[in-house]
Image (cartoon, rainbow, N blue to C red; front, side, top):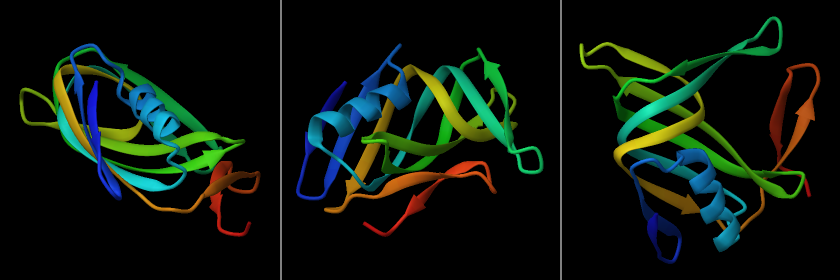
Amino acid sequence: MEYKKLDSSIHFRLDRDEEIISSIIKICQQEHITAGSIQGLGATKEVTLRYMNQEEKSFAERAFTEGMEITSFLGNISRHEGEPYLHCHITLARHDFTTVAGHCHEAVVGPTFEGIIRFDKLTLNRKFNPEIGLNLMVFAN
């Protein structure tokens, strides 16, 4: 992993076999990022996606072990119980030009991943909402 921090952004590159989510969390820990957004693209060779069943308040999970292009990687950064918390979605293109998409739980980089973190000078926290079944952003201190 390599990255360059500017005034309100971090440009980074991940290399083959690095895991995207844990790498972004590591950058957030090292640079004390407590709120922001993420975008990126590249390729993955393994990915685990989740899809929320809204009625059951549970996630279905599926792993893919094929090389795919990351055509869109979007997410936000907040904090939950004092630790970085990422909420990221990913769209992946297969060799036959079909796509798969969902909540990105884990993704192992194929050739490369290039991303940008835009961060703010505030702290966004999350709190579990049992009615919805998710950790939601809270804006009160």
